Image (cartoon, rainbow, N blue to C red; front, side):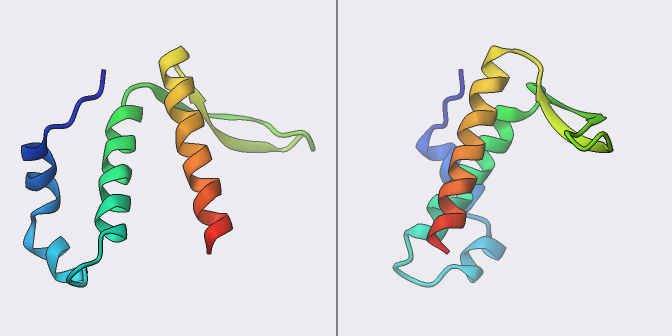
Length: 88
């Protein structure tokens, strides 16, 4: 189970280089950065890359879940990515 404490969030997002990039009062950028780090940590060890044939028969890289939990995290990451693409 993935659990992040407030202290963990402050330690990750409290670095000087990150704080220099964020405008005062901006709550969106820190939230996206936090979600990026949380998803990366959640996916670590739960997905693998494979080279498989695509529908056209050509070799292509794919991200494949190792188990059901990996599939759920990968599905969430894809959903978040699609939502961001629509809002741009």
